[in-house]
Image 1 (cartoon, rainbow, N blue to C red):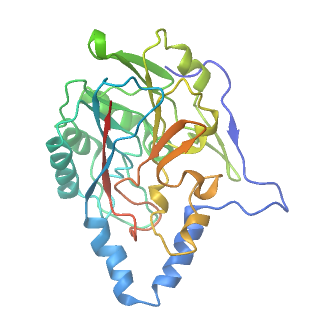
Image 2: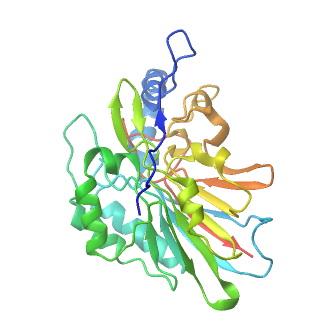
Image 3: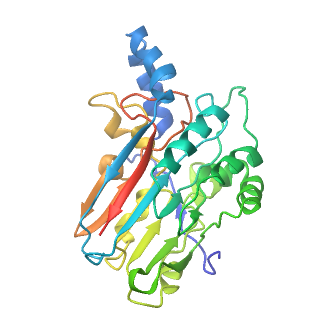
Length: 306
């Protein structure tokens, strides 16, 4: 369900403030640095994006009851159709994710790719049909990302609906058997609607989402951008995010300053703990702006709780 109150607007810094850091800036700079080594550039463009790893977490969460076991597979930032995410890549990802045999599969948005150069697209029904092969006892659930909103909102919604993958937008559902129940919540995208001049209006509504939760059972929260994490209360046992691609290209002493987040490297990648609140940020699978990865291989997350 969408928010009933006006969403927040994200803005660029005012004139004279510290320049806003974007992925475009870091990748432009990184490309120049990579030009110093042809071998490194080839690896970043042709080898690492074609790799695939499973990154495993087993966090001890204050808000998750001991003994309440749950295994989670997380797929973020597929960017289907990019040069590094053609149909054969998507099939391999789904096969690897299915082999994990998790209790639930969570899809964190940015299902499609967009580049300023010509590339072979994978149509929405095709990538959705591959994701439909994912099977888990508690189902496959999704949220949408900024690229879905910016470039093909109608198509992405229709594709997911066509394969019966529910999209949570400012909503929550209670899942699991009586003694193992938990809430799965998902918010709308925080950068959904471009307003021009670096400003965006989000469709996220965290208070509305949390109001859907009616019992004391633990809560998992799906968000696309991690920047909302400082506003997430302790009531949420674990927040899961994508969007950053882990920086996508990790050039030493440079990457952490150019993660696409107003918080810089604070929520760039991995398991983040602040005031006993827990966040895990996926490095994602596909690429954006340029089809290259360095130091952040495509990853599927496998998380074990309890």
